Length: 367
Image 1 (cartoon, helix red, strand yellow):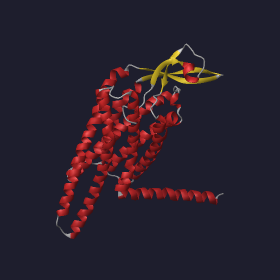
Image 2: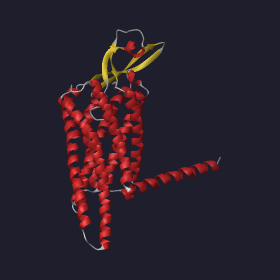
Image 3: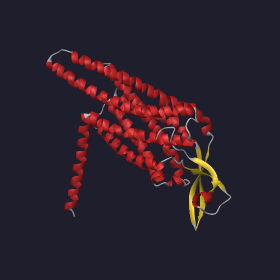
Image 4: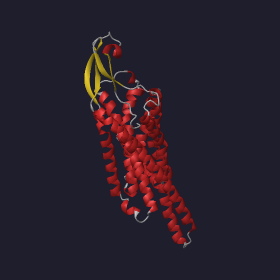
C-alpha cells in the first residue's frame, strides 16, 4: 500500500444494533470501528489488488530463492534480496485484509474484534516495507554508479557485508519512523445482541494522545525521507549512471588492442553493462510510480483540501495497485536482462519438477 495513504480505522459514535444488523434502535452508542469505503473498492481492492498481490508474493519468493544460490551472491544481489523481501511483505501483509474486507465486501459492516487490530496494523507494516523498498532501490542506484564510475575503489566499499549492514539500517530506520503509528488507537471488544439469540463481537476504538504529538512530525518525515529525498537521489544517480555507461561504451568501442584482450574486455564490459542496465530499469520503474505518489502527498501536505475525499481515495487506490504492480515487474526485469538469473531459475524449477515426479511415481508404485 502507498505509505501515508493506507486506510485507517474510523471510530464513529452511533447506535449499535440499528447500524449493525437492523435490530431495534438502542439508546446506547459506542465508538465503533468502521473501515473506509473506497470508491470502486471492489474493483481495485477486491479484484485487482489480490491478483497482483499473489503474483508479487510468488515471484519475489522465487527471486529470493534464486539470489540465495552461492553462484548468484554479490553485493548487488544481496540488496536485491532485501528488496524482494520488502516487496513480497507488502503483498503478503495486505492480501488477507483486502480479500476479507473488499473481495468479500465486509467493508460495509462495522469491524469485528480482534480483526480491527489487524485492519490497523497491516497497513502500517506495509507502509514500513514500502519505505524499505524505496530506499533499497535508491541504494542500488548509488551502489551501481560507484561501481561503474570507480571500477577500482568502488568494489572495495560495495561488498556483501556492506550491503547487509545497509539493509539492516534501512529496515530499522523505516520501522522506527512509523513505529508510533501502532499506538494511534485503543481497542475494546463490545458484545452486541443482534436478536434471535445471535451475539456479535464487534470492536470499539478511540484515538490515543500519540497522533496529536507525532502526526505533524511524521508528515514532514514522510515528505522528506520517504518521498522527496529518495526520488531526487534516484533521478540524479540514474542520469549520471546512464551518461557514464554511454561514455564507457563509446570508449571501449574505440580501443585498439590484441584480439584476445579485446574479447576479454568485451565480455567483462558486457556483463557490467547488462547488470547496470538492469538496475537502471528497476530505478526508472520505481520513479514512474513514486514520483506521482510523492506529488500527491506533497499536494496534500501543502493544501489538505486540494482534493475532495472521494477523488483522493480513488487516486490512492490507483497508486496502491500500481505500486504493488511495480514490485511484481522487477521479477520480469531480471528474467529479461539477466541470463544467469534465467539459468538459475530454470535449474530450481527443474529440480522441483523432478522431485514432484519422483513423489508421484512413488505413490503410484505403492498404491
